[in-house]
Length: 168
Image 1: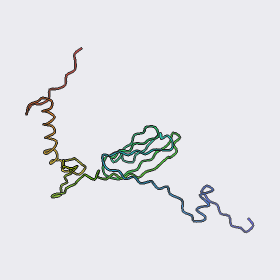
Image 2: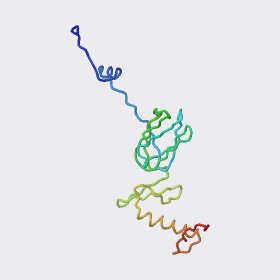
Image 3: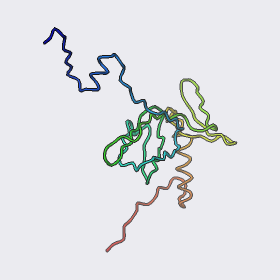
Image 4: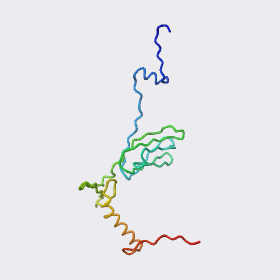
């Protein structure tokens, strides 16, 4: 062997060269998107998306129409979406953070409980993740149910008649 040392790597060519010279491998960082809860955003792709993988669909979800990917914010948190073309090649990678929506939203904390309102210009109760459900059900849901019942022509205390199907 001519007295020369041979270096053999189990890594394929370019990776062996990077390892030999100590160069770090480039990591592909996800692009950040910040979106408010209960809002949507359009992401326009350069090529037709075929598959979109969502890390946690309870935080955000998507629909595809042509070159557009519609991002729907569901609940607070951070997740990721990866967009692939029909050949399975990655078109994009996004880190999606969903925050409490809108400049008109107000969260009030009292005695360890959360109450949310939307104020534009008057404040109305709005249900968000983390709100006190007992308070919301008593204050809002019960009143909505009563209002809907009255709109359907029911008197207080009556219940809706069961739906019937036409006989054949």
